[in-house]
Image (cartoon, rainbow, N blue to C red; front, side, top):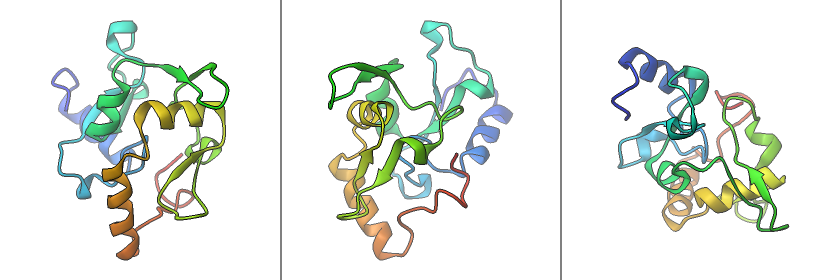
Length: 148
């Protein structure tokens, strides 16, 4: 986790996220890596350490996002803003595939660009979701949990 952000702010961000990556929705208790407190709008681009600019992120999503705030929508080739956990609703931009319930599909240019940039359907995540499904823990109920 970031060392600049005060501990109490980090704890707030973790609680607000329900201890799930706010991008791919992976539960942090099933992730072998330390979660990140991610700057939605990077410090290097003028973003602040305010809670409104912070999101809980798994290492995979954080590493693939880096300092990006937009990415190419693979369906149109047009740059689209990435999903913003504070202002966007997850269900407006993403859905679980009706084929397998483990793959994420993009419903909007923002959803498709975010899936491509952050690689929501990387093999390790698909395997994790399959195992969680066997345990009855996937897909998460995005309407009743702390997912916007």
